[in-house]
Length: 326
Image 1: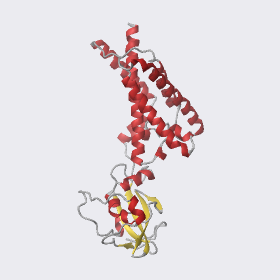
Image 2 (image 1 turned 90 degrees about the vertical axis):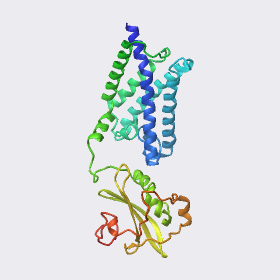
Image 3 (image 1 turned 135 degrees about the vertical axis):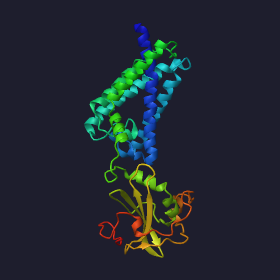
Image 4 (image 1 turned 60 degrees about the horizontal axis):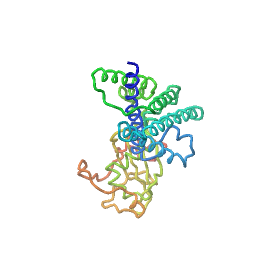
């Protein structure tokens, strides 16, 4: 009886470990892709110099992906001769992670573990370290495990389901990410207090129809100014209008998904809103960096020009920009 319970307990470790590793890798990759920057990576990469954080982050994600797939491929009869090496590597990975979290907690107590991308922003605590240690013990305990077999009786199925549920409960109690997920589901912060990184704003801007429509007017791919006012973040790019210095200003609403994007062409000297050129020419430097000028079916008609009111929150009393009052 005891041997059967231990056997069932070992059988459920492999799929759980593989799911955790693959889930963590996908969460990190999703965050990097959504922000289009490796600079947003959290966790142990913060212990390295800036020039090493990108390769270290890529190596961590690739290791998690490779070990997670290896655990699945070596779970049965096929490839079982190398299963011990894969499971030992899994245990060492979690042991190194636990040691790194201890170091991170002492050096950078304000940084999250980054285990599950955007969900792991809470500072490292003893629970996070204990979770990595328990996962390491679970992986090392499966080194000599025989090939996994599907349960053949109702009793075995019920036993494994109970074990999986118990482990998930323990994993949830040791995971601060669960609290953050529940908070996100049940609460939406006001847009004035919403935290949206500058990288997310720029990524949303570059995907917008306004960017595709007016990017040809930009003379430098780097924004000249970026600032936030309440629910909007403004991004200004240098431009030209009839031989005069101008700025192409985008207003991006601070939303996590499909934010509203508005735009206006502003005279740099007077702050007056200028009309859009009838056929804007692409500057040589902007031609290489601008996105394709394809029109979305959702925006069949081009906007002739943007009124001053189309950039909310920007008025003549603003200390940042001399825009005329509306």
